Length: 176
Image 1 (cartoon, rainbow, N blue to C red):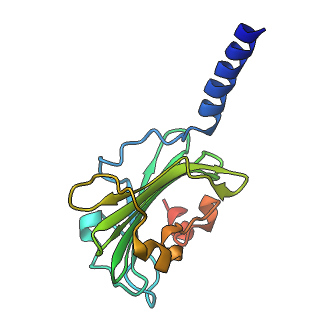
Image 2 (tube, rainbow, N blue to C red; image 1 turned 120 degrees about the vertical axis):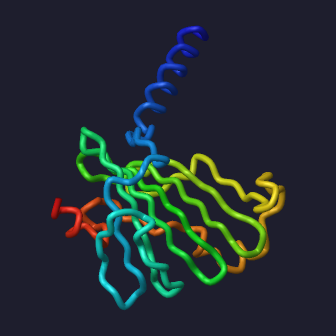
């Protein structure tokens, strides 16, 4: 009975891992297929030839987005949003049907630390399977949560669109 339970638990773990593994098997080290940006809160989103062609983003609502598409219509979206004392990086993985399925989030701060979390989207909620604070100089994990994380807890929550059609530049995506 114990061997059978152990085998069942292993199969459940492997099946569950595959069920919630991100389908985005794209290399964000390669140039993005499409690039969009909103330079500041007063301007609309626009498409650019490359990430290098994007003007400097304003700390007041500036956001850039790089897009990688897979043959099965899976889509990886990497956004960068600068702020006064931080810069937020979000990698959102969308299934071929347009549902957000996995997120990687990193918040780099001017206070000498950064925060990283990643995990699947289950029932429209971000479930952090890993979450850690790091020293920005040494890249070593911090043992104690930084004070600013408690002072500004909202900055640790990524901005997520649960469907690709809800992305702020979705209309521009349709043009290609």
